[in-house]
Image 1 (cartoon, rainbow, N blue to C red):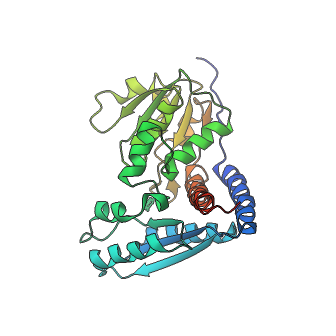
Image 2 (cartoon, rainbow, N blue to C red):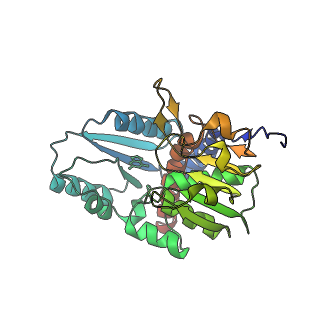
Image 3 (cartoon, protein in one colour):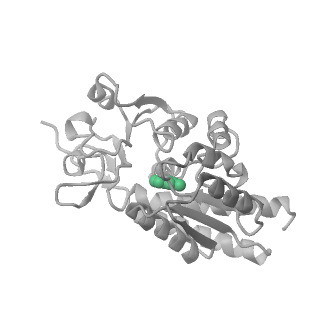
Length: 292
Ligand code: GUN
């Protein structure tokens, strides 16, 4: 048997801290030109996980010097009322990014809500215009989680050209945009999902694996080529109630070349990229207003 690898850990906390420090610097420079980036976060209902996520997002903004507002609404808020509020924020010059936390209550059509956000303020990158821009390689906002994964690959100096990247999971928020971003960097991309016939046959060929399913142990050591880079987007709880990803970390780290932990991997990067997108939206606004 060959010597097991001991995968290098890609530290999402450290990379996110670095990213946020750069955002803070650029925010200060923009402020000196008379513009403070602003993010509005809208939370409808009292989903406990969502409450934690939005609190973390707003705190990260404040820490980096951005203006942020958290608007909380009862689960009885009507779709029309939410659409009207988004219309107001679209016109608000102090707000550069609008984020409606998902999931929304069942009586509200999430697609309709996302499409109501001005693409210029769509810092989540969920609008059809943002998805289309990513697909055709035009400037637009990239969804924060796959964008953060790309930054993690960049941080280890990984050249994707000609490499085989396997993405597990085909969600609009992670899997599909992830595949497009990897493709843009000249990787050969395989997008696997619940109907994939032989997942292990695919992952064993991969130089890079991104697991984004939302289920424990989707990727185990026997499915990984020695030295591969493994990015874990999952956020699950194990039997003891502890946070864990989609990857069997203890096993896979002995085979992979690089691996991202959960917690402390992709999660902090998602928030950091939200700040980057909001700052970017504000910088575009400053340029459009001729603030130099
Ligand atoms: N719910 C879970 N992840 C996300 C996210 O990245 N953005 C929004 N708006 N809602 C989410």
